[in-house]
Image (cartoon, rainbow, N blue to C red; front, side, top):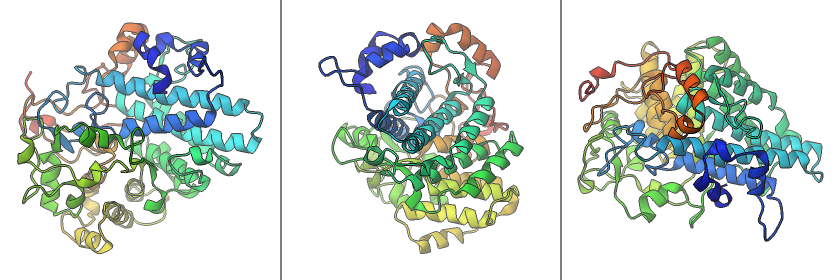
Length: 488
């Protein structure tokens, strides 16, 4: 947790300071020697994960830039894919390991040691923690590729942990989620400490299976057998059925519990971001009804800022009012995403109920409804020739609509683009750099875990922004993108 390990951060890196004994000591207040509670760590890990995914702070999370939903008005390094100037890769890595995974690990240990809990209560709470942990591991793999996994949370024995193969990690995550399907009903969970579902364990079971569906379908191009089995298991066990099931972080109206977007866009008093022309132009061409939610009406027409170039804030469309609300829920996984996965699964002939078109229509309708649109507006949109489901062109069409729907879950937008190679993104005006396929490894790893860093870099084909992840088996020829080829 940030509040009680800031001293560690200032003194050393993640791996050099995190022994079991040292980390445990930082969970104690010397003036009030009471051990941190498991539910406190569960909440802390949940919020840290949600904050990292939702943040638009250029020091922490630039997925809204990489997905080309937003661009900058003044500071151009990040929309031109300079990840090292502000230590963005280190911050993503450290936040997820330090403030999420280590808190989850400690919480698991405390749950298991709590003599006041029944075995059923322990089982249910460990299942909740397992979902959060699997979610975080997938984010790390989808950001970097191979990462420390099997040795990562045991710093006493492995102060310099090896990197595990990303595909092997994915397979293990599928096994872990499959194993806990019946655990959520074993007893009471974390109750009021649960800022996602408020203790509703049926919803946690759906979240777990929806996450299993996500992981499975990410593999459909590279390991179709495992993708199909995971997907069919998830669908059979029960995934999200409506927007009421969405896994979202509940935020409040006052600090320190607001959606971080409010801090980034309102409290800061800055005007650094505008919607990018990449997204705005596509949505304008389709007359997408979500424009009135995604964007402000400060101009007569929706006009996106030039991606990766200098932009005058008053001259371009601003971010929609919904994203200025401190209580805006932080999306981890939603019903629209689930339906897009099921649409692809049905298109590929997997054993899921419903047709690809039915799931595709449900995905778009769910997204439009979530952002305040009506069923009628969704029906009108789906009737458009460029939107109506086309089985002959399903990959490009589904990928584009999936990308539009993930506007407020921007890492998913990047994942969709990398997997489906659609839509055509812009090359940033200032640099002409290609769109990254991954984050490079943190500088801290090169300094403090060099041998394992070098082995991992060699294993993935080079620690480069343009080394594709294992599940990204096709990549577009970005030299044909608007803006021309990147400069040498």
